Image (cartoon, rainbow, N blue to C red):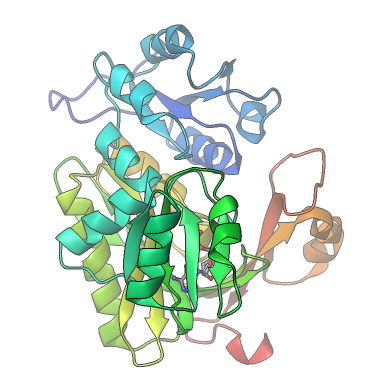
Length: 371
Ligand code: AMP
């Protein structure tokens, strides 16, 4: 039985079905949070037995399968996504018949590092210096303009450091360009950062926006290893990071969540690295350390419900369980103040995110000295 819909059509009341494109752990944890608020979820994912399919009914079909997508859209009350490497064109077509939140244009911007950096610069938000690169002469010009060290990244479909080459004094540009395999790329000055931080903002259809605390992210082999909440940065830097996230969400007219990753430079400036219009690995700590988790907040924003309180009641250190780290699950269960989250993936391949643990600390003591 569906609860009566509000007269305000931007509100999708509990009882409705949320369609989630993408079936990884982010979809799984979103569906779990949605269920707590009385929603059903329906997943769309190309892989059989994906993590989200273990907790919600799933359509298994390719992201390019327009007929399957249209049928899926007819079975749900709102469509969102937990993964951004889905064809923006599929989502654009879908949005002609279904309510899609956030809008497909946000997806298009976040999918392409050139569009993404152009967007931030257009709203006066600083990034590393960059140049678009479409061929070897572009790369030679970019190196002439911005120098070395620097990084060449594929403009699209890169994640966890894939599709990136560092360009040092000795790097041959022909070889660096060959690694892009002809794909459009972006050349960025190397930022000698002090730390990497991120902030997640939720924005509802009424334009109200709320951030979670800014956190620090530490990577190993280009994959997020730990998130430390809160980040040890100044209050002014934290407010500036939040203001950037809110401004970006407003300019994109985003409904849902936006995660913004930033570098803090050694001279204290904030430079945006990238954004993701969905729940983010650096927000997993909120499940155990905040009154409202990023996943519940995502559901609230997408459904037009009042946003929840984002106050942090504990400090936290979230550690990803990558590949064989998952074998530590029983140790994690024995540790006090430690919350274990496993994603139901059967094969622990190297580099694969299998789960995470969040260790809680009394408010104001995030265990920095112990890590
Ligand atoms: P990305 O895929 O852009 O998130 O990059 C993955 C990681 O590579 C980042 O989290 C940084 O640690 C590093 N990185 C990316 N771009 C730069 C840059 N311009 N300068 C220094 N480090 C970078």
